[in-house]
Image (spheres, rainbow, N blue to C red):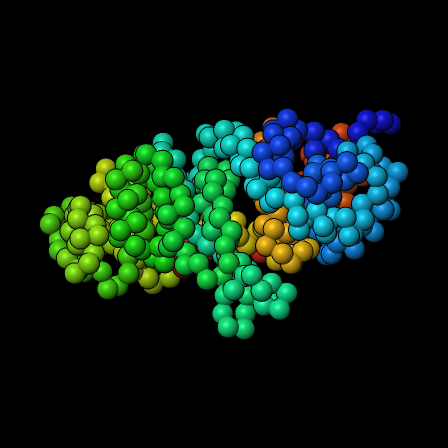
Length: 388
């Protein structure tokens, strides 16, 4: 019989605790931490994520049922609903943001050579935004519409491993295109965006940073063709052009040349037009890169279904951001363990196993490798509409 650590404790052993302590020291506050430490708060919220708890009372009850095991998890003393609520409301959410970013850096190194469907040596990111609707009476700080509240999750997804490299949480009023001002663009990397991010001033800033973009064009973009390049219409391409913008404002906002690629999606009978500042890639690769943008849509769908970010355990801005960043930390932690233990199962399968085995005394590698991965039809069905 295995007499080692609980599965939950083994899972948390993969966390860099020294980094966590540095994050805590970076944002000191007056809230007492002797009886309920920052790490106990993190463990309690991670438990809520892994087991899909519905409320703070639910968290208190479930952890109380395993009170004799809490010490072995690193939680000192009983977890009370009021204590956890106060900690989420008062302790700086940036602690958990910085900790999540440190794990993201680790995960990206592990997945640096992961293929993502396009033959490309450069780093490729997909940028998109999702909106989470809230009650205005409970979340008055998250203004969206006159009678509605919402938070928006702006995410830059590294397509190698589907790791979120940048996350910005805002209220519902922030236009998604404004998030481009918050991103530090990496020279040589590709940024793949839908037409909601079409802002030529910001795209020119990206161009000056020596990064590349692939974005779907709007129908009202005015331009003049300079050159046309040969294409193979059999693969769906319709044109590959070098253009300059001629609009009253766009020509000033983006004075450099652009590449315009038109692609026909026969399966969905759609004619798609892409703009890019890269002139070296084959035209078909440009279309294939945009197809990979769908991965960020699947990421949003996945975390909404399998992590607790649609129903919040606190109503303050600090509590909401704390919960979202801990959810992202859990996602990245499971991705790191999947890679370190070389597990073939999907993240969904791993989370399903963890949700019912956290308090078992079984080697982590054994319990995660014991169940064969099952195909999730619900995840695959929407992949057909790649250019939505």
